Length: 249
Image (cartoon, rainbow, N blue to C red; front, side, top):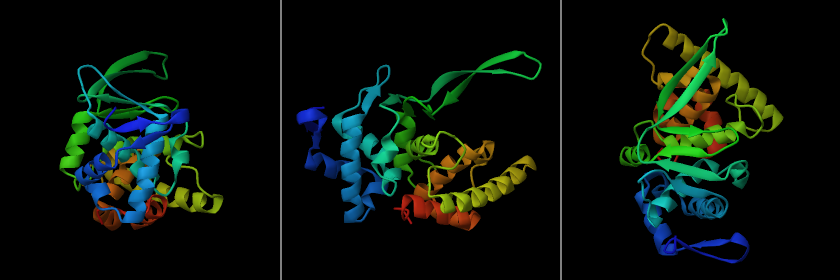
């Protein structure tokens, strides 16, 4: 990472200003930030690079610019929440493409079921964030398509900070109650539509569980805020307060 940064004492890093400008220009979301928010993102990205190892998997090779882009994307959801959102994990694993993960479940009869899922991202409650580089690139190429896998997985990390992966990140108590009520009502309405095979404006994967609902809606906040506002105005208002104004609004 010699071109990206130089290491200072006690683990501090300094990002090369020219490379930062290139990284910001290459990402539609960061390119749209006002100067104050870009400065905040720069500080968060520096902290990310001090605390996290970015590890390519298999034959994937990431250059300095790509590493900086990944770090900035992971910090984008933290512009209002702050560096506390980086707590609890230390590694970003990056696969070349979608990857397979083993799953198991014991049903009510005690029978063990095992299978493999193909994933483009994953966030362990007490472990790394994992991303597919091909899907990160696809999100950058179509920033308004409703998807951003990096935002999705960081939303899971924010959700888990209070010890419960339930679709509600740490919030002041009064806001948390309003958030929980509004999100539950919107989640139930979406699940009702999906159960009846009705068309939904929001990706039906959001109806899988409250934590997926929060993560998917977070993607829409950054990549298709107009659709989120139209479909779920209360949820959109909470996310604007939590994340700040959508860069692509």
